[in-house]
Length: 204
Ligand code: URA
Image 1 (tube, rainbow, N blue to C red):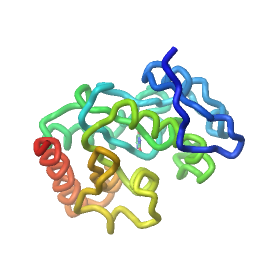
Image 2: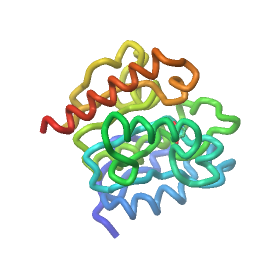
Image 3: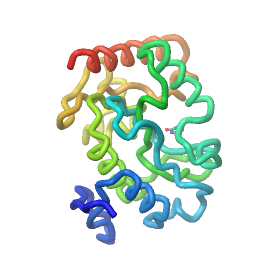
C-alpha cells in the first residue's frame, strides 16, 4: 500500500479525502469507484495507459464506446489520429507517453460529462499528474483544458501557446474528434501544438 496524500479535490460527499501516491494503488482504487452515476452504466473504468514515468502526458475528455469496451483510452478513430500526430510531430508513441482522461467512465450515448461527474473524478486525474510528474501536458479539447487551467475560456482562444502548470508546461490543443470533424485547418493547428510540445520537451 502506497503512502497517502490529501487530494486537492473535495467532492460533495467528502468521500475522497486521500488518494494513494502509488500509480498501481491509485488504479486499483479508481477501478472500484462508484462516486458518480457513470459507474452504473460503464463496462470498464478507463484509468489511463502508458509509461508511469513519462515526460509527456495527454489528457482527453472521457472514454467513448470503444474505450469503454477496451478499458483503454483513445482506441477509436480519435485515438488513431492521436497516435499518428504523436508519431509524425513528436516522434513518439503511446508506450512512451501517458494518456488519461478527465472522466474515467463513459458518459452514456457519448454525451458530455456533467459538472458533478467531473468534480467526482478530477481527484484521480490530479493524483495521476502528481505521481507521473510529466514535464509537458497536452490537453485535448475544452474539458481537459478548462479543468486543468481552471478557466471557462475555450480551447480555440487558449491554444497557440503554453502555460506554466506547477513544474510542467501545459499545451492546450483541440480534441482529435474536432480535427476529424473540422478538417485541414484544425488539423494544421493541432500539428503546430504538438510541435510546440516537442520543443518544450527538448528544451529542458
Ligand atoms: N475521447 C476522449 O476524450 N478520450 C478517449 O479516451 C477517447 C475519446
